[in-house]
Length: 411
Image (cartoon, rainbow, N blue to C red; front, top):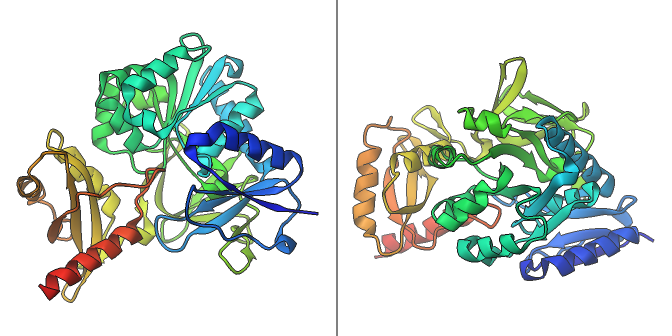
């Protein structure tokens, strides 16, 4: 009988948890990958399709969280498509090794491990603490069997890339990598410039839990030559845009269904397309279709008759603030009677920096921006940080801002 096994994925026990996952899948079970704490709801056994497969959380950045059902066969298709992409770049899969600093309960961490199983190549879990300690990371990497001989592949979120770029040891580890896939969030112009300056072989990509991870990727050579965006679709992927500009994906590895807490529903429309929440732009260059992501549609705001994408403005502000003690910035919307909505900026200064001085500098940098793009208020937020997968939990910080504004009103 079909079972749904709940697996708590503690990053400190990644190897052990991956083994437990493999054992459950070999028995034909479905496995729900859960974070170390939090979500625990299970899908009723009677609703499960034939297994084996995994249930992975998606959509936690805005709106309610949902859980996608991905059978093992779809994970195999995803690994195969990524392998084909690597071979097109000139790599022999048997000469590759995967480093994995992402959690097992996120689709990117899951797929890095899954690719190593499908390709029968080396794989090493990197504990979260190592990404904040580049010296220890470099020491560990140097001890890995095959380091310096095999082609090193790694998947990162922009936050991890940024941390490693600020340390010499981190840069040396990155330079040892043949391909550095970067996804999960917008890659800022600052990071792209710094990565190119170091000659890092970045491959910005796009994917989702619903698509079993990566569906587009930019070749490292193209990135180093100055290309931007998320690259071209993999061979098993079709892309198009809706009239509203939302990116749609069609591929044989779309999730079978998603669980929203009450029942299963199809992620596809009648023509087999999954509609993302991202505003995309498709362009053709040198007979190749390429994808650019403008921002989240559900994160876009309407201010004074203009449609504004906060993610773009965050990247623009980070680029302008290069050299300032700015650790993180997040732009959120508040209701405004005259404008409809206006932006408020949450700012986390670097340790020891004067927050008020930093805000004055940021105000000056954005003073010439169009009124709809310019933050109306600036708020210091010392604990501001994205999630482990590099995405912003905007609903959480929106609530934090509401509480802050309520306290200010009471005072």
